Length: 332
Image (tube, rainbow, N blue to C red; front, top):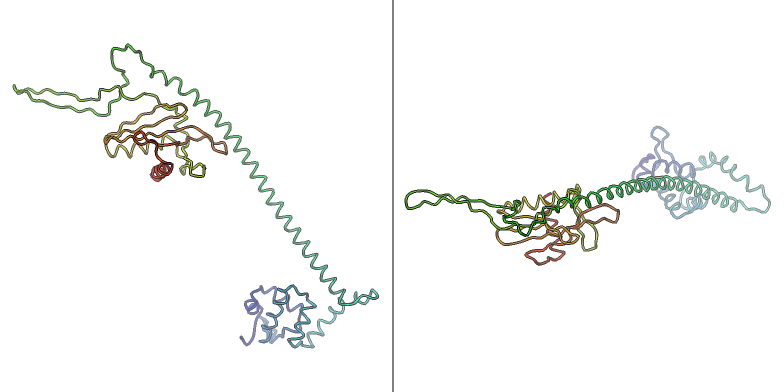
C-alpha cells in the first residue's frame, strides 16, 4: 500500500477516472482524508480503501445515502469535513420537513430516483440522436444503391442490345456453298514446316508441310460478350469473380498463354444453343472445352458464367471446375 495517494493514484487503484475520484470526494468528504493541500493534493493511505468501498457500493446500485451508511460502519469520518458539508446537506434536507407525515428517508429516495430518471432520460435522448444519425446514413446509402441499380440496368440493356446485334454479321462466313471447288479461304494453319530433299542427281527439292484439314468453325463471340466480367458459382450458388472484374477476353488470354508455353495448341470458339464453347486441343491429345453463358447476378450485374468444363469430352466435377478457375485467377 502506498504511503500517500494523488487523484491519479486513486483512479488507477480503483480502475476509474480521476473525475470519478473527485466526485467521491464531493459526495463523501469526511471519509477521504487529505494529507497535504499542495499540488497535487495528496491523501492519507486509508483513502485507497475508502474509494474501493465506494466503487463497490455504486457497482451494486446502492444510492449515496446507502453508501454513506456503509462507510459510516467501516471507516472514521472527519468531523471538520462533515461540518463543511453540513450546509449542503441541510439544504437538501429542508424539503423533508416541509410536508407533514413524510420521512426524510422517503424524500431522499424520491430525489435519488428522480435523479436517476433524469439521467436515464438524458441517455435516451442521446441514444435517439445517435439513432437518427445512423438512420440518415442508412437512407443515404440506400439512395446510392438505388442510383447504382438504375445505372446497372441501363448498362445491361445497352450491352444486351449490342450482344444481340453483334453475332448477326459474324455468322455470314459460316455458311459456305456445298459445291465450292476449293477449300475455304479461312482455313486455320497452326504449323508450317519446310523439308529439303536431295535427289540422286544432286538437286534439292523443297516441300512445305501444312495442315490440310478444313479446321474448326469460324464463329466468334461479340466484343460485348468478351468484355463482360467472368464469374463462377460455388457450392452455395454464390457468384465468385476475379479481383478487378477480369473480363472473359483476359481470362481466355491467360489460358492461351499458359497452353502455348507447352507447345502448339489449337483454339477455337463454337456456339452450342445459348452457350459459347472455347476449345483448346493440345499436341498430347488432351482437349479442354469451357462452356460460357451470359447471366446476371442478384444485384442485376451482367456477367459471363463459366458453367462447366469438359475434359476429353467428359464433364468434370464442380470441385475440379472451381480448382481450375482458382488456378487461372491466381495468374491474373
